[in-house]
Length: 206
Image 1 (cartoon, helix red, strand yellow):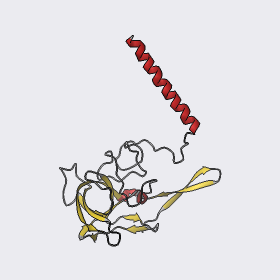
Image 2 (image 1 turned 90 degrees about the vertical axis):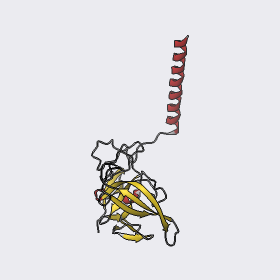
Image 3 (image 1 turned 60 degrees about the vertical axis):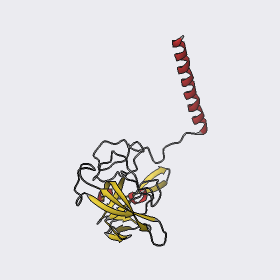
Image 4 (image 1 turned 120 degrees about the horizontal axis):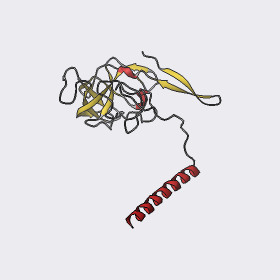
């Protein structure tokens, strides 16, 4: 099985944290082109859905149905048509609930052959995100590429990945937060600027 590597990162003084690093190049960015209900999980009774996911081709109108599309059965509640997701394909490995890497193989789930797994943030070694919630990527992440090594910002910036495009680094993990006094001062400055701008416009119209 694939090993998990950890790298120490110094915070302050003699305090260190360990950042988990997972090889994301074994995964594929895909786009969901269709969804179909296929029963419920045994025990938990969570709804299962079979997702047709395109991981190749040029767009949703131009692809090879046999080579560029996978079926993945998932219980993730946040999957939607046209969502960009991360697929752990058959033959790759993912981080299991016990903290060990496990191999991904084809399996029949809900009466449908599932050809992989959808990744959540934990499986990718990203900070944030709930377990069992499929990651959703911005449109700048190209279908068929491997996912970013860190969680992208909502506007698509940040993270490194297989899209082959320049990316703005994410802010530091322990970026300084503003104090209440600093926030109040910043808000007062903004109000003063707005007031000055309004007064300037009023003078112009006189």
